[in-house]
Image (cartoon, rainbow, N blue to C red; front, side, top):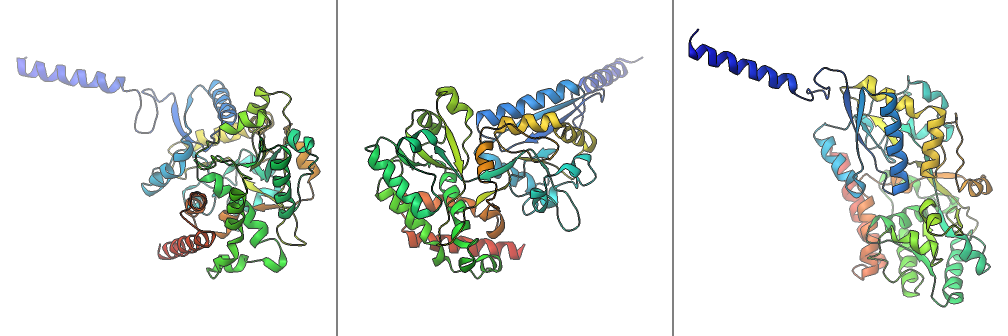
Length: 424
C-alpha cells in the first residue's frame, strides 16, 4: 500500500470518528438519536414566575430524560427577538404568544385542537385561543385578570375604600398624599420601562372608549376612522397626577423591581396591573396587598377586569419535534402541574381540570360579577402600537409632548401601522 493511500485512509478514519463524536445532528438529536433538545422562549420576567417555569421544566426533564429543553427568558428583548425569528421563519419549538396567539403569531402556530387538554380549556378563553374553524393556537399556562394592585395596609390606615370610578380614584390619590404628608406615593410607576405607561393607557382606554354604551368607539377603532381627540383625557389625567405629586418623582427612571421593597415598607398605595405578592411578603410578612378592577370613567359606567391571555406555549408549525413538543404540553396539562404553575405565577388557571390556591383569589371572588374585557391594544390597535403608546407617556412626563401631542402621536402611529398592515 502506498504512503499516499495510507494517508488518505487515515484521514477518512479520523473524519468518521469526528462525525461520530458530534454531539447533535441538524434536528437537535444527540449522536445516537437518543435525545432531542427543544428550544423554548417565554416572556416571564419576575423571579417568582421564572422559578415556577424552571422548576416545571426540570420536573419534565426528569420524567423524560430523552428530551432536553433549552429555556430562554429574554424579558424586554422578547418581541424583537421573535420578530427576527418570524422574519426568518425559524421559530422556537415552543414560544409564548403573550396575548397575540391569533393576530401576531397565528400563521406560525401548530393547530392543537386534537390534544386531550382542549376539552378542559376555560370557556372564558375560547374566543382567544380558538378561531371559527376550530383551530386551537396555544396552550394557556394561566390567565390574566388585571386591574390595579393596592396596598391594603395603606388604604386601611387612611380609611379608603377601593375606588369604583376614576373620580373616586383621583380623590383617593389626593387623600393618601395629604394624610401621609407625602411619605406614601399614591400611584407608582417603574417608568424606565415604557411599558409601565403603556399599562396605564391600555387599561384605562377600555372604560374610556369601549365599555360605556354612549362612549363606544370600538367600530371606529376597528375600521380606522377613530378620532384620537377622544383619547386625550388619559394623558391629561396622567400629567395632572404628575403636577399634583400624585405619582413618584422618579417615575421616568424608577425600575419595576423597586416596587417590591417600597410596597413592603408601605411607601406605595397603588400600582397598575397585578403585582406578584411573594417577594413583597418575603420582605415583610405583615404586608397585605389587594387587587381591584379598573375604575369606570364615564357616569353610569361599570368597572372592568382587563385580561384574557397571559403566559402560553404555542408549538411552531414547522418544528422538527412535533411529538416531543406535544408531550411537553400534555405534561403541563396534568392537573397537578396546571395547579403548580398557576400558583407559582399567582394567576388563575387556564384549564378547568384544576383550581389554584392563589393569594388574590378572595378579591377575584369579591368582584366575580365584573366582566373581563380583553386588553385594548390586542383587539383595537394594530400590532406595533404598544411601544409608541408607552413611550408617549415617557415623553409626556418629560415635557416633550403635551396631552394633545400624545393623541396626535397615537393617531400618526395608528394610521401608519394600519397602512403597513394593509400593504402586507
